[in-house]
Structures are given as C-alpha cells and as structure tokens.
Image (cartoon, rainbow, N blue to C red; front, side, top):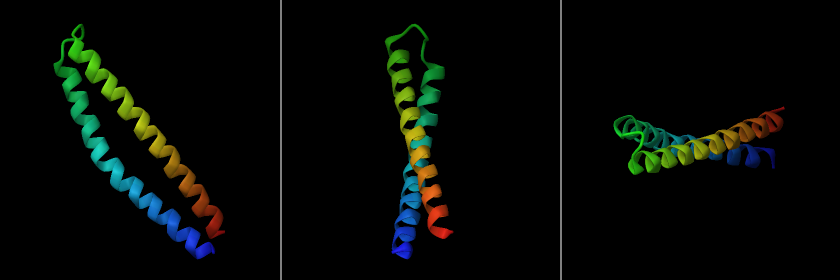
Length: 77
C-alpha cells in the first residue's frame, strides 16, 4: 500500500511540475502585456485580471505540491 501511495504522490508531483511550466510562461507573457498596456485602459484591467487569476492557480498548485511533499515524507518514514 505504501509503495502504491508513494507512486501516486510522485506522479502527482510530476504532473504539477509539468502543468506549472506552461502556466509560468503564460504568466510571464501576461506580465509583459501589463507593462505595455496603458494603466487607465480597459485592456490593462483585463490583463491584470488574467494575471491575478494565474497567480491564484500557481499558488494553489504550490499548495498541492507542498501537500504531496508532506504525504511523501510521511509515507517514506
């Protein structure tokens, strides 16, 4: 059972890593759009909203990654 759980945790961590990479690239592109947009424009507000939502996603993924690390530590001990 521990080996199976450990396998699932490792798979989850790898999937999170694979998902975080393109999201980080997207966040960088959105940040560049924010720099180029006029702060008073509707485009800036929309891009800022995208940036905020991407940050929420990345934070939740980091929380899941931390939880997976804790589970892996418990299973390994």
